[in-house]
Length: 521
Image 1 (tube, one colour):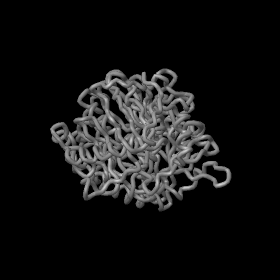
Image 2 (cartoon, helix red, strand yellow; image 1 turned 135 degrees about the vertical axis):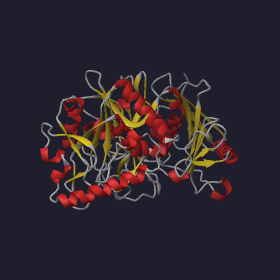
Image 3 (cartoon, one colour; image 1 turned 180 degrees about the horizontal axis):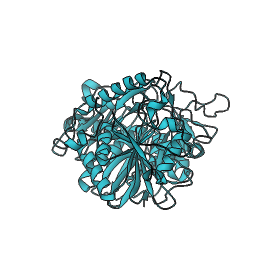
Image 4 (cartoon, one colour; image 1 turned 90 degrees about the horizontal axis):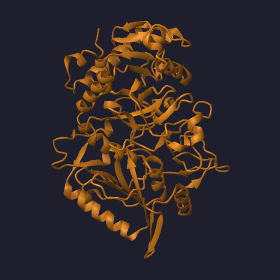
């Protein structure tokens, strides 16, 4: 175990393994943020209030050349460019105060990845203290990664071989992550997520962009989905125990969390709808780009003037009902959360394993309060492979094959749950499913009520939908019944079907998986 220590040399201080309170006090003293009324540290990140995928690169070398799915998402950079920027960043840290912690990612020790986190901002170190697993082991194992985050050091595209004044580079060969000019803290956790997503599949582990929780009987559930579709909200269930809200692995020993904390969206957060998240944002937590009342310093969660992507980062210890070992057994239910803007998908459908692969690869949903720079504040349709395309470096079929393998191995049922619109399209008279309705559906899944339900099939999408669910308006279950005009519904269903077909052309899959998707009738 490493001791907490601060050393000052030539007006530069190096802080090692500081606890949350010390990091908070230093951040406040340095003017990095304000102490909000609820006790959380409130910070802003400037113009970049989300991830910057266009500024993310992976070193192309003998380790990655034939293993990474290169393209617009996984951009390549040379070893030489990485080394030059790495050396310049190290020189920067030699002259400036910085913070070091010895943390880890992955709660299953068989697959745990130690990471040394070095930052120039105290609040970034506090973020990692909250987000990662706090081991504080300093041994230099062959698996240890180094994450170097110089948020206040900007890059030069011409000199550094990057695209802007900021960059995120990943070097798999030497186990290094380099961030320059990036204040949005989510970049750090997603960089380590991408590392796990590259390293775990050859070991038989499916890395997943999902939330997970466990019932009283030990039954685990997985909630896949993009940001804003309900992963964090729906997994924070007062009647269940949270494993984690975002990043997990699934293998022969069950499900395990990659992280030691949560990173919840805050826009329109309310104590009534999301009590567990509301209560978790307190001393030791960070609020990112949340507007504060100028007089009381109380958070104004309904104010999106900074961004729709306001966030809170807090340790899992802030959730009372959690799995303290940070893992669970084999899942008994998998839920794909999709936010359908067309209003034509049902609130719930049971999927075959082939359909599970199809919808997993498609990753159809909406960008709700986008987490990426440049996407704007509106809501728009998207297809994000594996429900998290920016984080998965390998070819999509690697992850789809692992999903099918584990579904077959455990006989785990898979459901598609629409948290988007019904009765009409977004902006055209439709209404979004309310959280209580979705929670009722989720509870029916988790209580295995839908295993015994009677189903009918939607012809165009081939989806099996229950004919009734207790306490859910029956006309909502088959979406065509919720529309005033059957012709309007059919028109929008045709548009969505065409979008699915066009998107899926890029995948090379078995005829069975190809046939599991929607068809034009």
